[in-house]
Amino acid sequence: MTMRNLIRSAASLAFALTASIAFAHAQLESATPAVGGAVASPSEIRLKFSEGVEPRFSTISLATDSGGAVALGAPSVEPDDQSVLIAKIGKSLAPGVYTVTWHAVSVDTHKTQGSFNFTVTP
Image 1 (cartoon, one colour):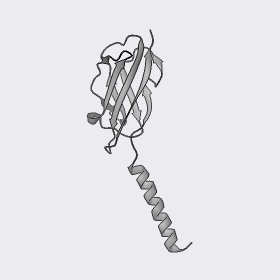
Image 2: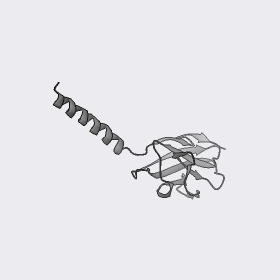
Image 3: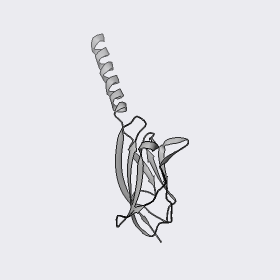
Image 4: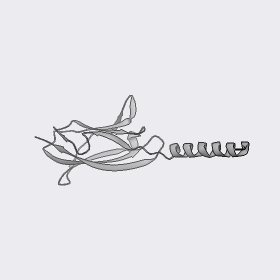
């Protein structure tokens, strides 16, 4: 391999690695309550993302199985881990199925969204 080809290959590899990092988005890695989980009434919703998120531009909403909205506190992040988005639940939840819907803006301003269900047991 000539020096010119070696330099081109190295430059292409560096670009590919940089591009994949630059285009990364905050993906949901885990949640509490767990996706599809069954729990006693939780006091908060905790979402762990693959990178830091901006709480001022991110939202978490909670709805009952009939579509009724459940009041949540404003989203915040863990003081030591900006990849954990938290919303406090203001009241005890009745048994049933609930849907969490989230919109996250990562610290590099990329947007992602999703939803999942969990069940509150008696």
